[in-house]
Length: 265
Image 1: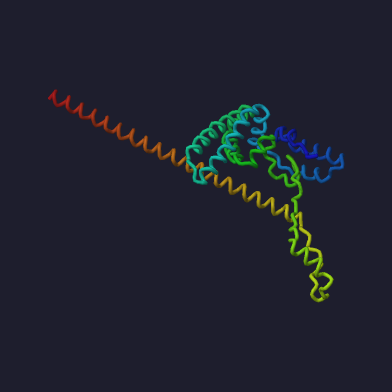
Image 2: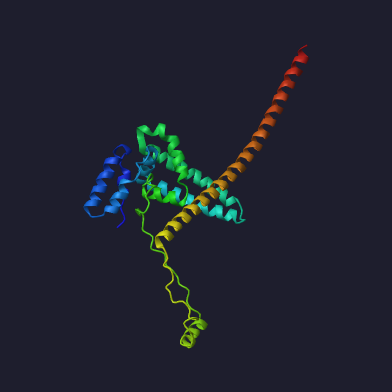
């Protein structure tokens, strides 16, 4: 049974080490020594991470909105990269900004007195979680437990299925008809094929998954930056128009003043 770390990551960081040791002792008493050792290696969360863990407990609906918004941006980004329009990506990015602000407010409120100093760190931490792996951490309220290794907090993945190639009918017929007639020198080697190293395979698969996650995060950051750039260009254009209008009004005002002074003279 996977270890449930939600209670551990709900205690304040100052109390984390004591709670972590207590959980490890309880696991060791149940003869779950490997899991106990893994728990002892868990990192104490920062105060900003603790605030986000409190937010998901206090306002789960706000976090659920953020989770949905992250998935929507990921889908819209894939569509845009594949040649689709950027309108859906802009809309999804706008919803993610609103959802981000709501989760940030919930975390600040949950933290209480220490929230003012932690606001920038909470904001940056939440931004860093906007990818599938980070989403799972926040959903479960265990932000700060990135170094879990093989502890399997959420669920254990099954061993990979090794599919062996089936012999063709021709090969099968040959083996039945010609095996007796084949001399020892011509015989096909019957040595067993080397066994698949499942441990190494799982390690490589984890590395590949991490690489793909990094690629998705980079693509998301690129798409978000492009949306921000488009918005910045619109803002520059609007500001340029407003500045030109303001300069025109200033010139008109100067002319009116000059004209009035000319009449007075």
